[in-house]
Length: 63
Ligand SMILES: [Zn+2]
Image 1 (cartoon, rainbow, N blue to C red):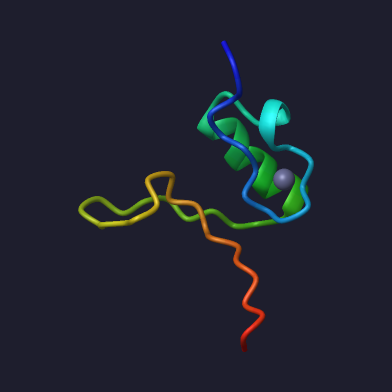
Image 2 (spheres, rainbow, N blue to C red):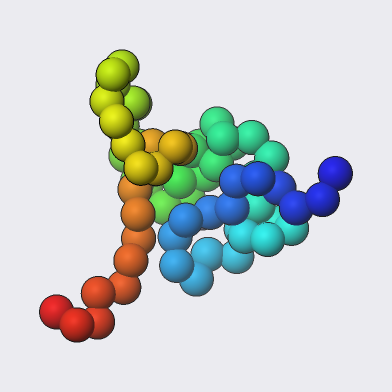
């Protein structure tokens, strides 16, 4: 089956790679319960570069 398709998007979280999630709703539940994130539902018709509708966590060291 290989590597799960839905690794956690939070930096330093261990739920990545082969410890990731095989289902998107499992990942979203993890983000909600484990990281206390509020994941908005995708609005219909909304275009997103992020197909999962998940927030991006990026380190902005230049700011
Ligand atoms: Zn996580």
